Structure formats: C-alpha cells, structure tokens
Amino acid sequence: MNLLRPLALASALLLAGASTPVLLPTIPPGLSTDERVFARQALRDAFQLLDHPAQRLLTFRLRVVSVMPEGVPGDCGELPFVSRQRYRGKVQALTVFGIPYQTFWVTCEGV
Image (tube, helix red, strand yellow):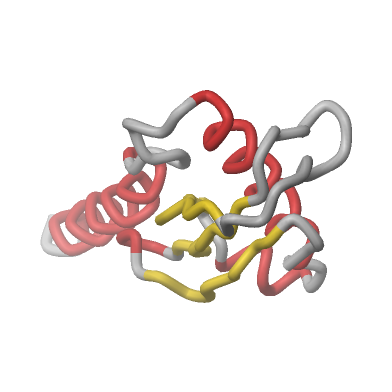
C-alpha cells in the first residue's frame, strides 16, 4: 500500500509533464492567413532538423513563437506552403512541461 501512493504520484507528474506541451498551440492565434502559411512551413522545416533520435525523443512539440515580415518583396516557400510575402519566424522545440529545448530561426531560404 505504501508503494502505490508514490507510484501514483510519479505517474500523475509524468502525465502532466507529457500533456503540458500538447496543450500549447503550435501556431499563435491572431496571425493573418499568409503568416499562418509561413508558420506551417516553418514547423515543417524545423522538424526536418531534428534528425537525431534523442532529439525527437526529447521534443514533445514544436511551436511557432513569432512571425515577422522581412520587408523584401517576393514569394516564400515551396508548394503547398507558398506565402506571398517573405517572413522570418522563431520556432521552439518543447520538452516535458513545455520547457524550451531548442530555438530555430526560420526564413524563406531555410532554417
């Protein structure tokens, strides 16, 4: 009986830690349609950089923190992720409890 209580507490903490990053939005609300298109591209590009199995194991979620226009005219991205303006975005890889593990700066040219 004494062993069940710490085991249940540890399980509850692990469940809370794993579910916290999942509850955070991947793309911030309030972005324009074009900015959301770039944010999806930024998530895809940042995920491709997580090439080591340990990195993918530690990363519970990728989220876009900010999207800023670069002010340079032209298209950005590859189909189907083409935005009409060039952007720069910040993407964070989150671990247990939503703790940032890595930060990526994504532009139209890559990460």
